[in-house]
Image (cartoon, rainbow, N blue to C red; front, side):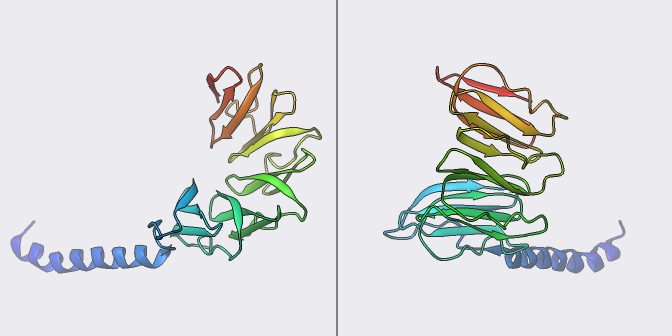
Length: 212
C-alpha cells in the first residue's frame, strides 16, 4: 500500500476500533460479575452472550450483551438462576418463576405456580413442579417443550431438545433427534445437562455418560 494512502486510512481504522469498543460497552449490562463486599456469588449460569449470578443475599446480578433486557434482573429473593439465549429466568424463594429478556417465542411467559427447579435453553425453558411434573414454555418448533406426562426428579432444556430424569432414574428426552439427542442411554442417573447438540448425564455409579 502506498505510504500516503496508509497515513490517510490509519486514523479511520483507529476511529473504527474506538466505535466498536464503545458499542460493545453500550451493549453490556450489569456489574461484570465483580464481587460485592458481604454479598458474594453462590451460583452462576452462562448463556450465549450473557451471564447471571446468584448472590448470597438472593439477588441476581447479570452482565454481558443486553440486546433485549436479558441482563436486567428484577428485584426479589431468588434461590436459582438459569440463562438462555437473550433471556434469563430465576426461581424465587416462593417457588414462583420470573423470566426477563426477549419474548419472541413466549420464553419469558413462565407459567404460574410453585416449582422446585428450572432450566433455560435456547429459546425455551422448562421447570419441575413440586409434584414432579415438567412444564415447558417458549419455542416448540421441534417439540422441545412438549414434555411427556410422568414424574421427574430433574430436567434440563437445551437448544433443540430437552431431557429429564424420571423418578426411576431413567432418562427420557423429547424434541429434535437430528443429532441423536433423544437416544438416551439405558441405566439410572442422578443429574443431567443438555447443550446444543450434546447431552451428558451422571450415572448413579458416578460415571459421566454423553451422547449426541
